[in-house]
Amino acid sequence: MERQSKPIAIVQGASSAEIQRLLAVFVDRHAPRLRIAGLIEGAAGEGAACGAGQLRSIGSGGSFALFQELGPGSESCSLDSSGVVQASEQVCNDIARGCDLVVLSKFGKLEAENRSGLISAFVAAMEAGLPILTSVSPKHMAAWSAFAAPFFVTLPPEMAALESWQASAGDYSSCHAEAP
Image 1 (tube, rainbow, N blue to C red):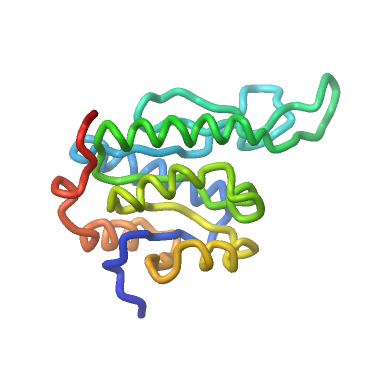
Image 2 (image 1 turned 90 degrees about the horizontal axis):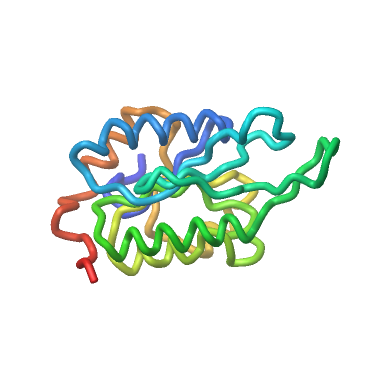
């Protein structure tokens, strides 16, 4: 079994939607006592062609487009890189204001193929020495490992595993960024 005291935990072993729900429950459970920055995927508005169409800011509750609709009547959608980059900028600002933990929905296609998307948020959290909880699709594991090895542990999609990692990640109150 891997040691769980690494600063980054990735959740794998379930659908993206299941993992996002797990992250949301984890955030709700810990938000009263921890300052959490980050993003979780949420469903798009009613009638939208794209499933998980929004990134919700944990700090502000605001949302950012994850996909862009391709026009009236279209059943397709396209990844909206500008919305994801804007969301990443929000997280970087939240980290700069001070937080205890960063939860990022996932290291996905934009991060793996273009070093874009949420990369700046991942880097800001790593540079601040903050623990990060995220997910990575198996198809992006090689890019993730090149980016974050050996600083991560892989967790099953179980609340007990997340809780155990969080407890071993250290005293968050002493590792946050100072407010500007």
